[in-house]
Length: 382
Length: 252
Image (cartoon, rainbow over the protein chains, first blue to last red):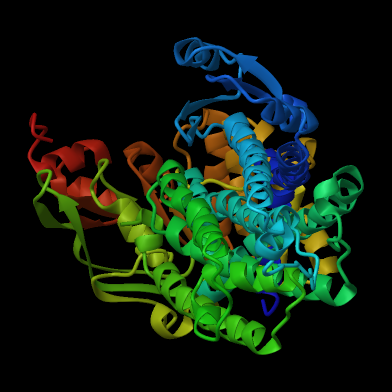
């Protein structure tokens, strides 16, 4: 009798591990994380290390001087001559990456901002800077002025204090966001099954006739869903770390970026996974238990998948960092702290605030669900 | 003794798409069920039998009135009462991903029965209900009759004092029904209290000591089957029921 919470948890876990759909949600979803990490790495790598031969076909709608031709040749630019209409047609047909028109001393780079054009634009900016510098030097020399005195009045040097790789960090942070999404998806199915599903199958009535306190029923169910979420989270974390270690050796975008996670980082990541699993499982059970049917519960829970992902993504894109206040805002707090851990800036105070606020939220959700399970509403919903 | 005092259950239902209305599933129901008695709760579909038995089993809460088991009520002694009762309905389902043995073991654990005692009780129940041939089969793979036997079996593990049986034989073949009816009589003879709801009047006439007839949520007659037949000047409970409600109209 005293162990009825354990009996309910045992029942829930047995059902969870025997149900193919729950198992698939729990174990298959994490597999997508390494695929996404590898896919994103390959995509960014392709962007960063694009060979000049892929975007060097440039149309010139005017007669180029010898010096212009020589700069173009030096920069490996393939010159395609023609009038403006011919070049536009070639551009539309994809034969050239962009074309240049000229009116007096004004050069216009004609492009549409597509992927190849952007790279070609960059190439042509360098080309015109070189040409402009040549013209300036020639002018100064013709007027008996030392070009170095004018052109090198100031010098600018870049001193890279710390190697920061945008793409690699972007992928690392996204890998953690995907872990949160995987946990959410993994919690929704068992939460639906154990509440609305159990009601629909008619077994809830049987359960309510047993000498078990409502509190034990709901905590047992909640822990069952949480176990499923934690398993998904841990598998996802392991796969994300392995994927990042593997991709570091495969792609140059990870140059100078440490993809090895220290034991402390991993421990904190696990703490966030556990806290988030408790939070999302409680929320899923609360929402699903108010739904009449399994289908209705699934529809009600679908937005949670997006809610778990988007605030974090937006915060990440806007460069928002963790503050004590943001540490208590649900959803966003987990993502921001995850990002901090990922970047090696662990703030124990913020983690503590996140943990305390999560306990408060779960308690509120619990009070609501227990109240529901004490009344007959749970049998009939709404 | 089960004592039901002035129990009323009110629900809210949709009258139209936007309008709601209150209706009484049960209204001012009172009766007592003593040790060694089978009380038949009779009435047509929608009479309020299931709601009444759900309230007695502690699944639903009465809107008004009181239900006590040997002076214990659900408000203060829910767990103690549920330790003593067995609720079996034709509608309630059991966990079909489990085998019969696993279900019985789970029930033993829930009722706090020790490991050795559990094995002993499962063996006893298996012999009484003759379920050994499918003891280790998944419940999902059993026939309706076999499933209902398993459902009955799970009610027995804790040696209940009170049985609340709601349409327990519905959908069963005559052999399976007879096994359950024989079992009910045997339990009555052991001094157990049994509330038995059915819309099969003949079945009730055969096994019930007393009968409570319900129609539209209200008790229309109580007494022994013999008393009811005598009072209504009929030869069976079916005719007695129709006599009391004044025949069948299309509205019914």
